Length: 254
Length: 305
Image (spheres, rainbow over the protein chains, first blue to last red):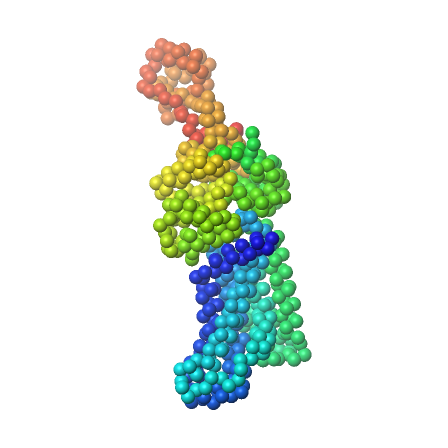
């Protein structure tokens, strides 16, 4: 059972090689840290003071996550999940995949696992990027010291885990749509629509019911009375279960 | 006789009242090359999809190697290779990478990738992406995927689609080689009747969801040869009709030629004696050969087995 799953995962992992989804994960992870780094070099007079600050990492973390939480993370998850989820439709390979000695359950969870690992990869690269924005100026400019504050692993891990949780509903719903609809525009259209909706209703008192809002809400720390993480997990469980059942009971596997 | 594929009362309908398959009882003997023929929409692809579990079975039974498909689907699929309609290939990967995707699922040795590529003539494609392959190369890659894990049963739906004449000949040789050397049973559907005739040992003809004929190709041709016709060019001399009536032989006129349902050997001397004795000139005589195309057309147009 586990061997079958691992083989299936390894096969699915190979399929993402050279795809737009794989490149997006790498480029998306480094994009915002690169912008912040360029910005830091542009205002180089502030570099020494900033790096000597005892809150340098919190400052970099906050600046990087601002762009990430509001725009890049939800958009990245929408695009990557749809691209990876639709690889079989795009290549007309569902029929061959379903004729292999593995159950639909294995196929479903192997695909989901690949997307989750890619998301994890994206988070790791993003954090490496944040680290480099702090360290690289010190390597290239003599008068700039290395960050005075030790890298706060614990805080970063906790913060990242929360952001990871907030994007899971997006991932689950995009996964459901990408497995059900042959037309690439359906999951992309629904994803973008829900993202725009979530931005529009951000100030609404019941905005927390929109499943695509949680990354931005986590950054803004709005809705203090509502546990957005519980909502995010609930939506993930709901969409994930729905996606699995729809996939399992599909009449035609092609 | 042992059948590697056997279906009983296999019926399927997509919507209420639209029966695509009607009690199909397919029997593919082990070691055979079984040609599955039928016009477009006859139910060939639906049958093959049901065999592979790509469609949810509604009624009937499907067994592979004597075991019920629904009970042991995953175990049985390990011994089945398939190419259904268009080849299933990942266009952003090379031929070898495509095979690696499937190799990991079938858990066969890495050496099988080179073997399958060599067998299908794709061993020199290197890192070229499959999306840049010609239609024929894609089709051959589809075949390579199907036979990667050395299956006991190959299910091929229109495998010669997109192949040029040389490719078709190569494909035929490859399938015959697999069947002869590895004992692979091949279930192949095709519209190319002349190709099928050169390849298969057994045949099944389906039309409007019903299996009209099933058996060896030799038995079908010999059976239908009896029912061939004799065509006599007698310059549309209407006296020939009277001669046939005297001999009580059923006949018809086609393009000014006298056509008789093949008379028995012992009737021939009397037939020609009567015609020449009546002063009718005979300018040519030939028989209508019962090739597979004729048989197929007769069966699918009349619906009689």
